[in-house]
Image (cartoon, one colour):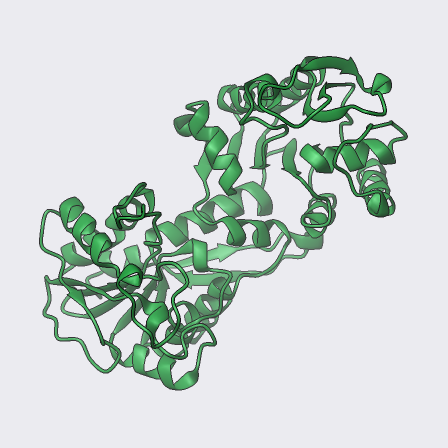
Length: 413
C-alpha cells in the first residue's frame, strides 16, 4: 500500500510514502465508503460551451470506475477556468463535463451545486460536484472550508497531477483532515514515472529542456545539471547557451544577462564528465514568419540580421544518435519553431528519435504534448505527464504540496 519516492535533487534521498487508492479498493476498504475524488476536468470549450478536447475527462474515468466497482459512494469535483469565488456564472459550470462524463461512464452523472455543507449519495452512485473554485476559501485553502470538505468523505483521493503543485482546499486542505487521504491511479502513475526517470534512472540520462527564455527554466537547468548525462537545450534557451560558448546569434531571442548562469551550467556538467551539446548548425530566417525563407548555416556563420529558428540537420542527427543510445529521456519543450513547417525539422527528428529509442521516456509541457501529437508518437513515449506547471516544478526539484501532504498522512496511518 505504500509507495517509496526518492527525491533526486542534489542526490539527496527523500523517502516519501503515499497510500494508493487502488490498494484500498483491492483490499475492500472502499466498500460502502464515501469517496471524494479531486480530478482534473479543466477542459477547453468553445464560445458556445462545447468541449473541444476531452483528454482530461477520459483520463479521469479509470479512478471513478475503480471507486464504483469497489462499491463506494462517489463524489467527483474539479476546477474549470478561473471563476470568482462565491459568484456563479453559467460559463463556470461543469455541466458540459457532467454530460461528457456520463457518456463515457454509460450512466447519468448528476451535477450537484452548493455542496459544501452536505451531499446525499449512496454506494454505487456517482455525482459531479460543481466547480470547486466557486467555493469561498478554495484558492487560499481556508481551514473552515477544508474541514467541511473533509467531513463529506471517508476517503479523499487526489487524482489531479495538474493541480499537485497548488495547496488549495480540494488539493491540500481536504487531505489534511479527511479520515484517509490517498493517491488515485493518475497521480500514482505520475509518481512512478517521475521516480523511474529521475530518482532511479537507467543511464545515460538525457534531458531536453527548451523554451524561449533561460530565466523561466534556470532552476530546472541547474537542478538537472547535477544529475543528467546530457542536457540538450533548445529554442531561445539554446541561443543563450550558444552565446555562452562564444558563438554569434544575430538578432535571435536570447538573454545576454544570463550568460554567467549558462556558463555555470556548462561548467557543472563538464565537471561531472557530462555535456550540454551546443548546435553546430542552425536554421535561420530574416523574419519571424511562417512563410519566411529558411537557410541552413553553420553555427559559426550566423549573420547579424539572422534569426535562429531551429537547430540544423547535422545537429539534429547528432542529438538523435545520442537519444537513441540513452537509457532514460526527459523531454520538456520543442527545439525550434515547430509550428512553422520550414523550422520543424529539429523537433521532428528528436521526436522520432525518442520514439525509436529503447529508453524510458517521460514528456511534459503543453508545447511538448502538441509536438508529440503532431508527429503521432504518443504510444512510443514511455509516459506523457498530464501536468504542465506541476511537471516543471518536479524538474526543478521541488516537492509538490500534494506529494508532501499525502506522504505525511500516510506516515500517520
